[in-house]
Length: 118
Length: 111
Image 1 (cartoon, each protein chain N blue to C red):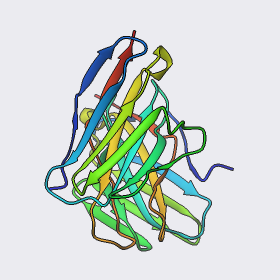
Image 2: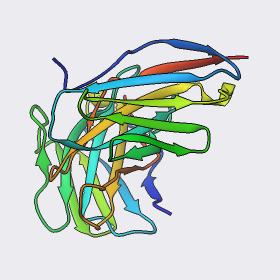
Image 3: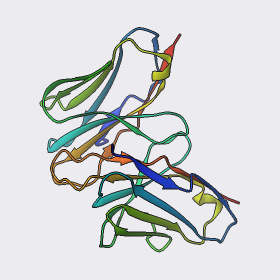
Image 4: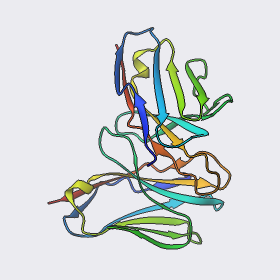
């Protein structure tokens, strides 16, 4: 149980184009999903917290107009990197927390999407 | 002071020995504690979660929590080369949605 998928797993695009990454919770409902970015040999960096049906909460320094997040259902969140540039090349990972509330909320991670912007 | 601190390593342990990974946190309001394993080039995978003081065992893994001293540790018994990875400690404050991660400890098990 608690499987999270991401699509695509790898994408290469030209500078200036937009890229959409999908994150799905396959066997549970997730009111809250999270988007992280990880550069080589660095730790996870939280970009934003996404709640179903409401606007995402972005971390300080993350441009909300560049990284568009939509969480339209309890099993799907999308991250769109708009007008991508080479410095946006990174490993993007989503995670999802089951809808059950309480201090035992756990984040289950998707397999990640490796984005390369040429 | 970082909210969650881990020794970045690398920590080298011979195969078959016990690997001990430590994590300290600064927020006394923290309620939930997690250990994730991340292989190179892959996403994190949940290993253990712990919420109460004491030990929690799951197979070869034991998580230990001491809220008074604000530390949480992970012991890996009978270490295998496949345990070589970066181990991330994560902490959640009650009512908070997001986890705070440590920098991770890189563990290498030597055959």
